[in-house]
Structure formats: structure tokens, C-alpha cells
Picture 1 (cartoon, helix red, strand yellow):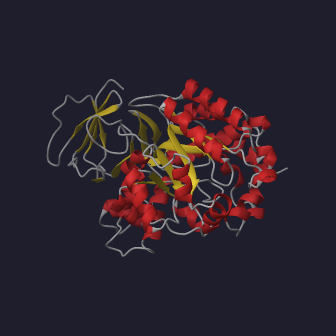
Picture 2 (picture 1 turned 45 degrees about the vertical axis):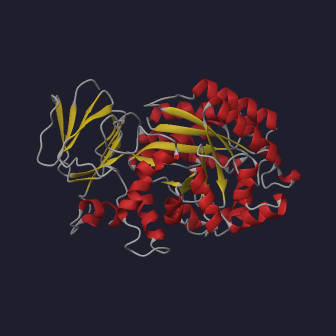
Picture 3 (picture 1 turned 30 degrees about the horizontal axis):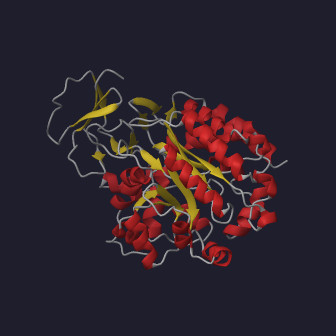
Length: 449
């Protein structure tokens, strides 16, 4: 958008950096060119105005960990009321039957659901590559272009099947050579460098219980040779800690260090069961952690030690996790969940709605290694979400920003990515949500036949 747009005088604003933008922001050519302080007017020429006086303005929310294919298996009967390992064992045989059209439908629907909640950047961890789905990343790139979110697509992997002591069925695992060759291919074909990137790649062996030690080491070498980040699940449950001890003779953080992963180019999903010394080591290495409140509650995995991790120097971001362990894909609801679950570990004055909003914005950007998104500041990408407070749940509220979280906002009214409107009046403007949902429902039904 080459014209300048003033998002004028929002009802409330969260910049994620404590800068004064009380009278709004000015956007041009896809970036923020001015913060307009309270009681001030823009110093830049203005071509158009968006009256935000009835809206709360946030940076676009950033989801640091997801499994979009899992939107096809929400509330799946065989996986209900199970711990992580039995839950996975109930679902792996179903997921092994994924077909290309199913993944495309799942990716479109999940990204749409996230965008409608105000989420402008999505990191997805796809690690299932059965014979019918060897080009899964290509499919996800195609779907993401249709919906319009920024994406960090992590080329996941599983190489340790049940025959070799892992959890996944053999039909879902690949050889190390197959995995590494495809990792190089998708990086070369799809990864974008620099500010404003819409599609980025990272490499993401699924977990210590589904890949070999050699693959962890070789993946790290490949990622660093190509300048991309690394991601995996770690310390989600005590069962995982026990698996690492029995299999490797190491706790998860020791294992992480042994394979060359204790580094600032790494972020971890969940990161719940760390001891004090491990938190210090993670902080010293500037590792990132994707905090997944809803998923951790569904599976009774535990509560991430967010404040201790932050104090140690770990970057903490927010994530909805997979839609089979959430069972939704709604980032603004996840902000509230983050506040609530942390109030079970910390006192009310130790973690606030502002902390939760920071995790979902600038904190998440730091986890993904990006400094061009996640906050409202001059030179940052024009990724924004606007919420109105005209529902019954907000009636009688007095602090608009606090009300957004405490009263349970669940949808954005307007969403912009890179200076382009993607949601207006709560509706996708580039896609037919009814058609997306119809294809998704059909795919979900076919998957469990």
C-alpha cells in the first residue's frame, strides 16, 4: 500500500515496547512509519484514516508452535482423557493416513482460524511424511499463500519408529538421508531471508523419542550451514524426561547439549520440566521456549516456569500447539489461558495481562528470531490486529486492554499483514470461509474412515 494510512486514536493500544502511540500509528508501504503520541497529530502526510476509536490495537499476534494437520482430529474419541504418550499412540495410526488434500485443507482452515483471532504469523511443526505426503512443506506453502499469514514452516522429522524403540509407527518414519535431503530442498526452494519475509523455514526433528541422535546432530549442522533455526519438543512431560534418562542416560537438557542444540538459534516447544540449573543453562544459551498453556492443560503436562525462564534470559513466546491437544487455533484466547495458568504458579501481581500480551507479540518474535514483527514501532512490519468491545462479555468493563484478556476476547474485527487488510469486520476478505470449512469437514471424515 503506497498511500499512507493513519490508524487513528485507538480506544487502547499495546505496543509491546512501552512507546507512546496513544493517538495511533501511520502505515505506508507495508511498514509503520510513525507512532502518533497522545494529543498529537501525524507529522507525515496522510492519505487515508481508519477510525480506531472503538478498537483496541495490538501488534499482530505470533504463534510459535502448532501442528496444523491436527485440526482434522479434534476431540477424537480414542485419544480423549489420555496422557501424552498414550495420546500419541492413539493418534499416530490415524495421522499416518494423511493425504495431500487433507493437509492442504487442514492448513487453510487452521491459518484462517488463527488469522480471524488476530494472529498474523504462524510457526507450524509438521513432522509426518508418510509415503503419500513426502511434499508436505510444498503443500503448506501453497495453502499459506491463499490465506495470507506469515509462516515459519518447520520441516519436522521422525526416524525412530516402534521397531527401533521409538513411539511412531514405522509407516510414519523416514531414513536420515531422506529427511536431510528434503530439508535442504525445502530451504533452497522456499526460505526467505530478511525483513518482511512471508515464508521462512526451520528444521525440526520431532522429539527425543522419535528421532535418532545422529539425526539431531546432522540436522543442526545442516540448519547452521543454511542459516535457519532449529526447533523440537522438549521436557513436555516427566515421561519424556524418564525416556531420555533410560534411553540416553541423560536428562533432556543434557541430551540437547550433547547433540549441539544448546544454542540461541533453537526454540523448544513446551519446556515444562526443567530444574533450576537447567533453566540457568538455557538462559545462558538464549534458547527460546514456546509456552503452550491450553495443550499443557488438556494433557495435564504441567505448567511452564515462564518467569524463571525469562529471568534467566530465555525468550518466552506463546503457542496454541496442535489442534488435537488444544483443541482450537485461537491466539487471543491463548493469551487469556496463559494469564490464567500462570496465576496457578505465581501470585496475581507477579504475572499480568501485559506479560501474557508480551509473550504473544514481541516475546514470540524473539523466539522465532525476528526483529521486524511483534511490536508497534517505526520501521516494523505493518502487522496489526484490532478488536472491538461490543459483545456482552465486555459490557461494564472499564480498562479496555485488560478487558480484552480478562473478559475473553475470541475474535478480531480487523487484521492487517504487511500493510494489507486480511480481515474486515470479522470476515476473511481473500477467502471463502464456508468453502474452506466444507472441504475441511470432508477431509476430517475421510481421514478416519
